[in-house]
Length: 301
Image (cartoon, rainbow, N blue to C red; front, top):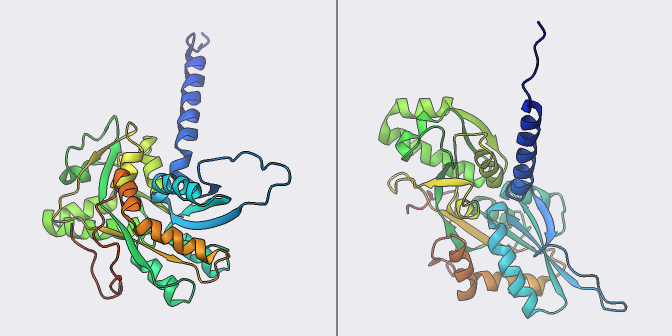
């Protein structure tokens, strides 16, 4: 007797593939580095109009939504200026600057890469403009049934950032504290369940959102941006760390005045309000000079 596929099975599979393709497309903005104008495409320039000046901002991927809002404010106050972003992992952006990529501003998700860029003569001295908290995210269906951070070893597939990525380094610091708190078995089990190490935080978020991982560690602001696709589990304050974001004008900036003005906006009350609305912590460190990241530990919450 011949085996036959049940009626409608192939069409169901096709629809499932279609739904997945739509979801992948919707989440592409979480994962992929981009180099685009703020707010999407701009209308064509009127004939004979002077070309717009461009402010090129290299920014950590986790700043996508908040910086898009700030760019609209900036452009409204600077007629004829467009803000363009290169959004990627801080380590990728620093490497691009080292290779001679043109940029006006460098905004990093940590002090390590920001300070290294300044010490290499690529940027001015960085200033802290925002802080963030790592959180645990799980798919909305939560197949591993995680209810707290202590349940994390139950997750069969855990996705984290690579060690050279700020979120990856923060995650490893959290896992080290967790092993000291919950025991060596916790740490060893967790290490064995790490499925991949991604090059920026939005790639971690995308894999969890798509159900390709049972859990991942991202920033609180990333979890807010993916609300509906992931659920958030707080990391206990005793083992969590605070991510500090730093910004500086690039010394070879083509628009040095605009670069300084962008940094001033980030450090302003209005800038802090936009960042807070996106899920960043209240910024009480904005005007402070950053301590040496080589001799300091991550801040406690």
